[in-house]
Amino acid sequence: MLSSLAHLHSLGIVHRDLKPENVFLDENGNTKTADFGLSQKIASKSYLRSAGTAVYAPSEAHMQYKMMFASDIWVLAVIITEMLTGVHPYAGRTQLETIENIKKGKMVVPLPEYIQGELKEMLLNMLDLDADKRPTAKELLDTELMQFQAQIDKANENNEQKEIIEQLIQKNKEFESKVRNLEIEKDQEKRRLDKEKRRADQAEQAQQSSQQTFTSEKERQILIQLEFDKILGSIPNEKDMENITQSDWVQMKNELEKEERGTQLQTDQIRQKKILTCRRIIMKFITKDDDIEGRKQALNAGIADALLKIFSTYPLESITPSHVWAFFEIAFLYDHQISYDAFKNINFTGLVRLLDHPDIAVVHRSAVSIQNILVSGTNITSISSPHPYYQSLASCDGINKLFILFKKNLCKRSKDNAAICIGQLFRAKEIPDTEMRKEVIACLKAAVNDSDSWLKTNSKYRLRGLVQDAVNRAEIEKDGFKIPEDDD
Image (cartoon, rainbow, N blue to C red; front, side, top):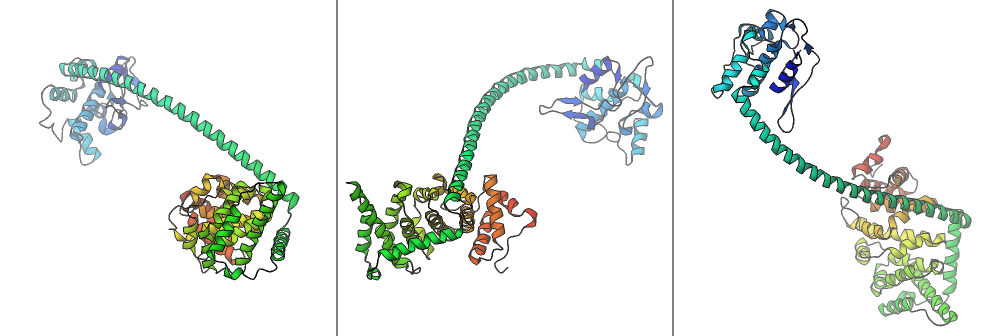
């Protein structure tokens, strides 16, 4: 502070508004003097008209309405004393009383005993009522005390320079690290954009394909009915379906896993037998939604695993609605614990692959099968925990594929089911993709007023899972939306 005043005074400038508010400390304890709005250069006369804050103005400012270099020295002493004691040395009960104390040179709180020697003498000289008797800034800097302080400052400066060099080296390392991280982020962003482009291209291609082949929900129902007619027609004499034993299930599993080799005719015959096996499974369960024991036997025999292998390895065009329908029937379990135990280690790759199938009946059954498996994980675990199947589906690009299916909008049921699946997967977890978050949540919000009671209920539950994340919550509660209660 003294150095800054010495510099100002050497230029013929009086600060005129020194006070604690205009003195700043940096992180290293160095002071900086600020606010030079009232500062003025002394020209021909030896003083300036008084200005600034009254309680930080010396007696000459109040008595003679003038300020000079010595006025800054007096204020500096007041600030230093206040910093050392925590009290303005002339503080009265009112501002007027403080000014009167300043005029008389009456220090309300004397300097404490711990301020002794040259420092005490220096402060008292700086506070002298007679401005002419106060030392100049240069004289103060030349005192033994300040010279000693200058040596300390110089030593500290050398240490600071070393620290600065070390900090620069460290910052350089950090900069290099940031550059590397930026390069990594740039590469990741490029990959993300490429992924979004691929997804958009896939959705567009799939949309074009679906528009060319399937134009309505009615056509989907017709295709399903045709497949059902095929099943009924292919098993005219199946009267023993009620009495399938565990060994029968194992035999059917072996049939599904049979290696396809030989001539084209032999290969076709093996594949046809597999389709007939799938149709037997469908006939076993198609009217028996509550046959949990029969489904447990099929699962224990490995039927689901055998079908999942077909879904993963067959050419897409060779996978028929019968294959997928058989899996759908086995995975349709009312008992969520049994379902979760059976599928907790499932590899979704095969089912996700079927979402790109050209046959809408296959796509529909695959998506519903995924949804049925997900719901067991949803109901068997805490609503406040991440979904147990999230990582399994994310690892095979299943979440992305479900959103592509959502975007295709093959039919209302297909779109709603995809939204329900995504809503389950992001339970208590942010949907990071902005487009996905906005569109899926908008779909679920609209569905809470749907006439379909299943869709209405499931949409509410999915929103309750999503709302636990702050980002999802902001999207859900847009425009004042509130998730309806169960009795609404």
